[in-house]
Image (cartoon, rainbow, N blue to C red; front, side, top):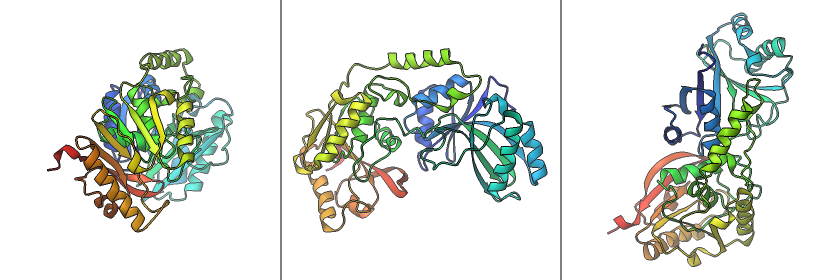
Length: 387
């Protein structure tokens, strides 16, 4: 067991984004190791709090509280009774257990959860709350994640609560939305740090330009609200939570915020409803003055005068439109990029390599992941390299 002052932490990443999350943690001064599904490190509770507040790409942060081997329910119950559940739970705090068992003698996930819940209740009188879907898991009850692989149990407590992509500002969405964490990952993969102009000609409800504005102004994603109050995290309900130390961390993050973005961030969409949603979401994030949002078709999208990055999540047929019209749209995107912004770079989310090829841009892959269950690829092209 790691002493109380040292915690074994794990930042969960969407498939394919582990390296980006590891790099993010390094930027926070956290020496993490990339592993399947995310990045792990050992450190203090202040690092766990910082990761929750500052990480833009991770899905959630877990703290491992127990590891043991069990092949029978008797062994499981014996180990579970030795876990110091009361260290993590207040009296009668409801819990949720998410169990995943593979290649193990104990394969019945419901029975595993039942034994663990019984051990928790003996110490804390806590009851298992009705399970939520993963999107809202951890908002009311304290979530424990239990992974069993080849009879080896790893039990972790969720430090985040609601998934970290739920910044709070995106209350209005357009069609085929991109999660906030994926938008941040796309920007990070394209090496955009707020030092050059940005244009999103298919902005939808504004997730990419809003995430860009947060980066440009050094606003922690946990402070993406108009009044810069932090969203709630699960660790705030732990018995040993130090509210004063947490307030100091939050205030230190506020002090890093720049008064305005130093570059032009332009966003457009031909759908009026989408641009209205983008403006409303930007206002909730407190960055409405940093983004120039306009109603415009692709052919009329206005690129900032400075050199920059065109970054977008274009329609790719699975949800919005299909056929020759879509191929023509991609061809137009490539032609407009080559003619109007020849010194720029172009980054996009692609779910169809055939459509991406219609742009005739020299794309190279940056990362592969999933968006809304669909496999997608992040692509980047340097237009200046075109002969």
